[in-house]
Length: 214
Image (spheres, rainbow, N blue to C red):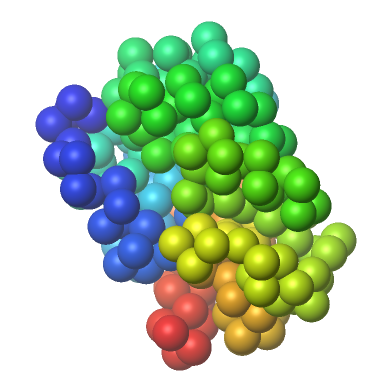
């Protein structure tokens, strides 16, 4: 169950292989099979965005099935109440598309990993001042690696930036060279209609690409 997840696991799951599988649009009845294929390929961090069908049920099923060795959570988390729901179903990760200090604080106070989304230096520093140490540059494709490289020059070294949004296999080397700690992969990995087998194959391609530039 999610409450058996050790306090060290959330950090280790992201550090061991910093890829987040974003399962936007997934249904509870298919989530375990899809996740199992992705996890088998090496990705141990899974996010179910809250604009998916019955997302908390999907998070609950993932936490129950994989929570002892994977970091499971929700994305598109915008409100404190949603953080409480993530905790209730056993999730350990809160991902947002924006910087909301109250959401970051609620996640950290509950012992969750908070990953707010930012675009500008002001937003990044606001997130850091709120306690976040893992941020997502979103949408990454709109800004590019040069934007991240400039931000890395002024952000503290212990702040990790994940490039999320429009990052494909061929883009990983440039983003890593610019200072990206990891990546959130959505439609390039899975979208409604993609089979578990295809999701596993795509996940293996991403893990291989990241390991090649690690």
